[in-house]
Length: 439
Ligand code: LLP
Image (tube, rainbow, N blue to C red):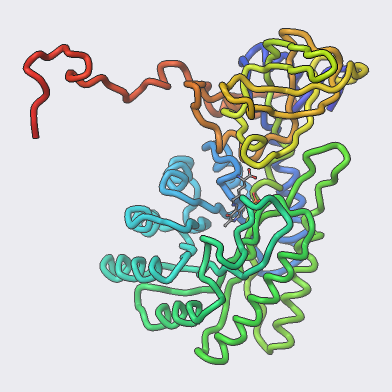
């Protein structure tokens, strides 16, 4: 929100936050996240019985976010041993957890089972066999869903489609793998199969690919029931619900996905004479992206007359690799002159040694000056979680704000954090003339 020309986030003056906590800085309005969850509740959970919403932690998972999600009664999608560890450390109720991933290690499967994660979403027949042997050895059955690749092309960037034919994710439907997987589950004491999962991709703003995938799944559910007598109790339709990154775009209501999905499932079940399974959705970006902004300080302004004006900031592809990876677009403004007239179009560039380190191009800004605080909007999802230390750049702090209150939820990394755990062998430094001990 803009108040007297200044950007205010969660009731706090953005430039004041930058001054107090330093830059770059991720700022999340906690109340906005809770508003999104309230919309989920109104439009989906309360409207349709036997449904569940699971937050996809890969979008943004500090311990504080785990705690927020836990307090709202949502489930949590985790995709690595590290995410399970974080959720446990935050006291997340593991029975509401889903463990995903296409290349899980044996250690991660054991960890998930021991931690009591509610559902392990098995990605292929080899993993199924491995999990079966682990579960039988431990005498602790695994509650699972099988992830299916429905063979649907979603309308989004090619790096974030996941449900297409030939995808690395899920059991393909192009042969009999699914029936063999279900048979394996039905014959094993170690595996309790509850149903299926698919995820068509990310940043999708129309519902067609989700609907197509549901239709395909329903056909298979019906086949499996007829051939093997397996009844699907749970259907997890993944996430992927997109948001508006640019002013002329619109973030779809969650109901524009979930209403047609639920109707389709209802009609399909009636047609096939199957009871409706519990339906689970897994939004990540939709839930947290718009609540977040990143604040930077302008370090330099370089005008190349007639060509471009580069506005250099003190962060870049290390705190937000999405523009470099996917050509993602963002909008930005100056926090202290948010409604001043535009001085023309500029490129906002990061500080990494890469020409591709451009956060946003063609952005209209008031005449930028060194020291200005620049806010990039809609950065709550897939920025902090994808941040890296390229060029030995410390990761920014994350703060939560709410109604004028503020707290640090992740400390800024220090230069010492960057070299922690490193050492110089004697044979490199030459400090021990006797040489290294040989093996
Ligand atoms: N469920 C599963 C199994 C997923 O793989 C994902 C995302 C989600 C749910 C949540 O998707 P969302 O609602 O956030 O779109 N780094 C990329 C996005 C990768 C998404 C991977 N999977 C980006 O920055 O655009």
